[in-house]
Length: 356
Ligand code: SAH
Image (cartoon, rainbow, N blue to C red; front, side):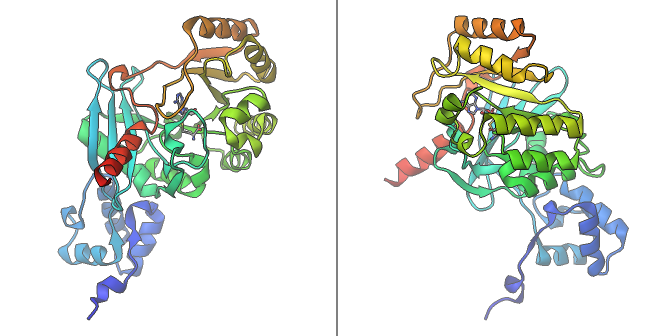
């Protein structure tokens, strides 16, 4: 005979906002203060309802009947001896793996979180997209990366960048829910101005994000100023070309007043010529935007290589001569280098090898 509880479809409790939790618990006959207590427990890294010590045992077992708790496990952890950067490979409840990176900066410790298992965007230089997208992460699974990294590392995390595995705007609703959860004062209480979101430029979703008027920083992965080059390295350019992306960025700035930062990975003989630098300057001229040059991390499955230091210097000089604000992304954790998504790739590789 089937157990009665196995017929109940359990709900993901950590993905509920305070008002949603309060309404669920009120349906169970619980007062508002209980829901506040439960909500606080959810950001504390508990792995079972029985750890909620100030909640009556009867309610704990009722919660267990109707809700489930996500709790990732550390599958692999790499710590840089040079700067303390930590890379985590997390195992999710369904056996999938994702990555997060915790970095130490003078302005506060920052975590880079994943938003999907894999990625559907197909960028030629990125390890996360090899093998495609497996599934979206739940709001709770994005939140867990912050909660459990903080506990495991002992670092107090004050800043978040959504720049790990996945395209955040391709998981729009769950990512927005995550942003609202992490922002809750009874939760992790991380302010929107301490959060950056990076997108390959899904123009309609950039417009949808602008409507929400959140005070986060939007970074757009441009990587080329012309459609020929961009389409070669970013297939998403066929749907949202350079001008469509830049138009949505202009609308975003008008609506939110927040300047956009453009990411540009310097790829040898692909997007790093003086022609590209001049065209980029022209396209961004007068926008007040900022270009963040990234040194390409070599991905073993791709034939692309980083630009030489001389080429990078010449590129920067052209941008600066055109009054474009440009910075170079500091490379953290050089001794534990594994490009975006590479740790997960290695794990899948190891898993496959052991199954041959
Ligand atoms: N999907 C989102 C966020 C994830 S990737 C986006 O496209 O923005 C975060 C940043 O790392 C993006 O700018 C991405 O283009 C860049 N990136 C990915 N692989 C890289 C590599 N091998 N070397 C340098 N930058 C890379």
